[in-house]
Length: 139
Image 1 (cartoon, helix red, strand yellow):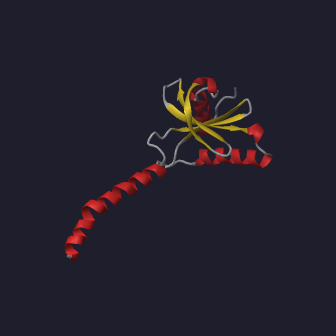
Image 2: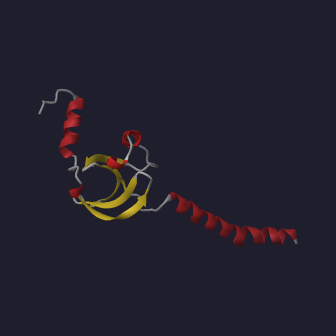
Image 3: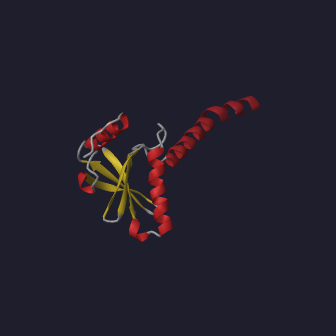
């Protein structure tokens, strides 16, 4: 191993030494949480710290060259994003031709379901509070 000579080399060496083992054996599979055109999103429990994560599994053998490049571009894009309202990217690795993309688990559910619940809530407010007010004013 090469000796770290500058700050960037030292940070990289520390990150490499503290990184969790990048094999699926370090995780306990729980359930499938989603499926897409390229693969599945699986909920796992990380054995090292007992945290829940989602690993997107993409079988690279089943993809064309262009599709493999898209999958790798996704990893590159996810790894460059850092925002509190975007699911965090943790790691990626390949095992037996399966690209594994480890990401934050958002246990609050799908955003679409949240919007549907919000619509119901707003509809109820309108029906029970606003509509009676207007009926009273119109009569």
